[in-house]
Amino acid sequence: MNLITDQATKLRLLAQSCIARARTIAVTSGKGGVGKSNIALNMAIAAAKLGHRVTLVDADLGLANIDVLADLKARYNIAHVISGRKNIVEIIADGPAGIKVIPGASGLASLADLPEDRRERLVAQLEYLESTADLVFVDTGAGINRNVIDFAAAADDALVLATPEPTSIMDAYATIKVLSRQADYGNVRILMNMVSGGSEAERIANQIIRVSKDFLGMCVEPAGYVVRDEAVEAAVRSRRPFMLAYPGSHASCCLRKSLKMLDIRHNAKRLSGDKGFFRRLFGRFISGKT
Ligand SMILES: Nc1ncnc2c1ncn2[C@@H]1O[C@H](COP(=O)(O)OP(=O)(O)O)[C@@H](O)[C@H]1O
Ligand SMILES: [Mg+2]
Image (cartoon, rainbow, N blue to C red; front, side, top):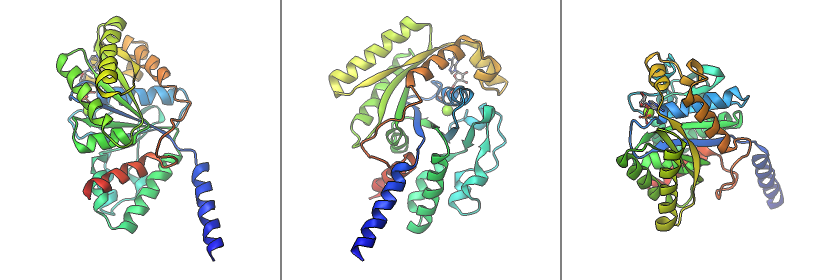
């Protein structure tokens, strides 16, 4: 009997280790309005254009969220799945360049309140989505509240955005500081947005990297920069992603370079072993309630 149970456990573990899971990249920042939604959406599109299967999770309830930026007609969101009115496949929206969008995933935290059997069914569905994508981008909200940090820490890569404004630099550092205190987190990277050029980006990013190392003992990696570019504003006004409306713009070129720096062909190694992003995320939600 014990032998059979042992074998079943081994088989399950083997099956889990064989499942190819998406690499998850959370785009986050301390401050709002620094370009998270634009960077998450357009990086997702750039990755899709390279042939990767990409899912974008909209976990920000801010004003300029993904459905507005990409002119999506998303009728349902994760709240409909949690209430049991829809299943996960029904809420996935088809986004530009073939990306899949999970709208309004901020309701995910309330999954922790569900009875265990229903929660397990939903997590299993989310895990299935994860196993059918190569990359999952997460557009988190701004700030250093629990929910944002949960998404950033559960991801393989937390892409912290900062602009040259002193408040944004301070807030990016505050986000890195909170991340450094988590029990488990992935790679932490800094991406500069709305800069005048490479030298300004490098100067500020190096400052953040040095301070994080000296004061937090934290290894933050550079993830490139995106210049301030009118093409981004024009694209936002026309509700088209700049990567598609202005693929030759300076901002689009910068973002493609940033994506290259992430080396997306490789999966990140996590301390938490073979658990995927959503299972790590729910583990955090549940432990946050106890
Ligand atoms: N690289 C850029 N160049 C010019 N404007 C930008 C750039 N990135 C963002 N913006 C402007 O900032 C606004 C806020 O961006 P958004 O992605 O909605 O930020 P967040 O999601 O962090 O709140 C956009 O509407 C756009 O006009
Ligand atoms: Mg946003």
